[in-house]
Figure 1: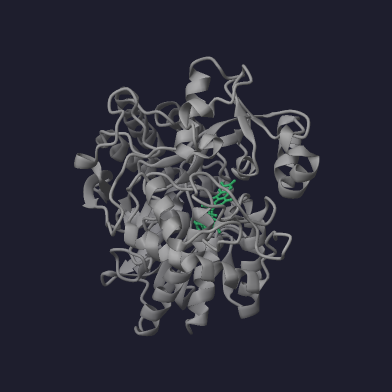
Figure 2: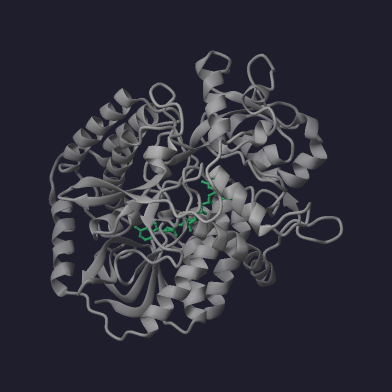
Length: 560
Ligand SMILES: Cc1cc2nc3c(=O)[nH]c(=O)nc-3n(C[C@H](O)[C@H](O)[C@H](O)COP(=O)(O)OP(=O)(O)OC[C@H]3O[C@@H](n4cnc5c(N)ncnc54)[C@H](O)[C@@H]3O)c2cc1C
């Protein structure tokens, strides 16, 4: 074993860093393992803001925030977790502010809050449109202040399970090469999402769902895997995100005729309906021939140069650099793109999983706050609130237990598997399989879903998984062998995709991001007001269900 700690946090985005800080403050010896330098984590790309009911721009309360979140989730979110989330969010925001987060302010000095989709009040706290960048740097400062160990550029690929509990992770050391085993009395998975399953996505190359796969292989179930959120405004053609803050600040969506088409789909909320609704509306416009080159237009011109430069400078720069359009003068071409995965490693509201010693937080986890559809601004908040809660719970368990064991045989088995991959002399290149996966997922498991296409996609994934058995890593070296780690990521992506399809085919209804307009156009609370739960059994997904935890919000029709 390379080293051992009380708490090992895998992932250094907002969730991982917040968990590590809390575990440290609880008195634990904590270390972070990350395949990227912490500030390169994908959280840094978050733009529009983070939700808490501070009531600075108009009346608001945690209860209203909870109701909006439950409704936005299409009633699939666990209501007890949502109530904890909205009640604790304001305190977490003030703490971030005291740590040095430079949030935008109102003229009278309060933290400014902008409207976001499906929110009953302007509750999204923001730093212009670089909120994630600000958060991640402040959290990193807090890590450095505490001198928390970071195993940087360590690629975790296997959990150590011994004596019925999780006791560490097996990693590939990217900088020096070689398998390294790290022991932890508890492990927190905070490895982020899996947007890279899709060819068009807002997600960085590192968002490959490794943590979900590691949990799955360790016998821990994934929850609600069929729910992938498509963000309505991703830049054409690259898929780079243009924040919902643009619509929050008053941007319009137009079709090729210059019509503000959202008035036909969501007459009250218009562009600020929930993301699933806006993405479906856009896709319908595009599919029915009212788009332009497979996109619609996001028009900010009426906001004026001053507001665009003050509130949305990053979006303007992205549009100019990647679409050649200055939004002060021209509308931005946008279309729906894969953005956020609502599903993940099943946890309770302390981040604990079914496996003793294993916790999860952030986009890798499913608490479940977002249910079938996440509200913009709720994810960053979830990384902080549930990152903190899981860090505390992991530390408390670790501090009341003494031993850590990493069986030598598991390390040698991992070494043998990697050696086999490196020694293979020919075969399919991983990037070819990955491209086929990304294109076919977009075609067959996108904004709208059809039974025949989902079944075809399941078969495609089956064939790609067979081809994966023979993938060939060209780079045989030890230093920064990203060819090897990308091959390992591909294995995770294929298996997690198989879980998503299993859940999607079986869910014979339309709910949130899972839309089946051709065969099951309605939500079916009688049969499907339940979470899908997927285990990995004999190399294949095995589906079961669990009830949604309800408190006081009874399912209603969603109208915007
Ligand atoms: C472009 C964009 C803009 C967004 N804007 C907003 C917004 O304005 N508001 C909002 O609420 N949400 C937003 N979201 C969503 C939100 O940013 C993410 O859900 C959230 O930041 C995820 O944080 P995380 O800590 O869970 O994961 P990440 O920040 O993705 O961090 C994952 C960490 O895990 C590590 N890791 C992964 N795999 C391994 C492995 N195998 N071994 C070791 N380490 C590993 C990575 O190195 C990284 O440190 C946005 C998302 C995108 C894509």
